[in-house]
Length: 172
Image 1 (spheres, helix red, strand yellow):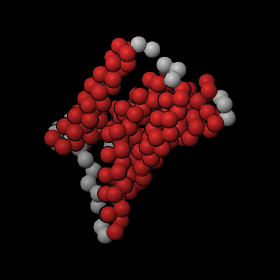
Image 2 (tube, helix red, strand yellow):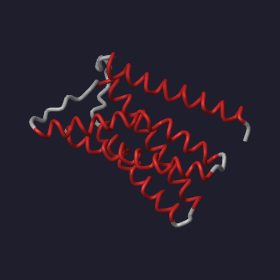
Image 3 (cartoon, helix red, strand yellow):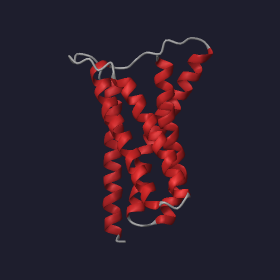
């Protein structure tokens, strides 16, 4: 494996990950939603379904690799990535059109909600570069390194997917 190829990947990963975080930061913290004449009120439910789909595919992918079915594992993990990517597009569209949904709960449940939300957001930020790196290592057939990183990537990705569904239900 050439170090030039690795360097190109690291630059690509850094640029994509930084751009994604920067854009989402702008969308959620700077730009106020609204002003778009599209009713995307159905999107949070679709997005929760995409998160649930991603979580299911991740668990299925883990089961596939543990049973030695590499090709099935590969397809399931790529499918989980696609579900997460489609979620991200839906999330951006919804928040661009509607802005944030304020949490209405009070008391102890409010603390639970914000704890789940903050951990979800922080871990979603580190998730993209981890997923890209895990995929890169597998594509380069560096399976020992892939496996070491995947031991961290999978539970974080699964946590973010599951808590996305939890957040949806807590907001409803």
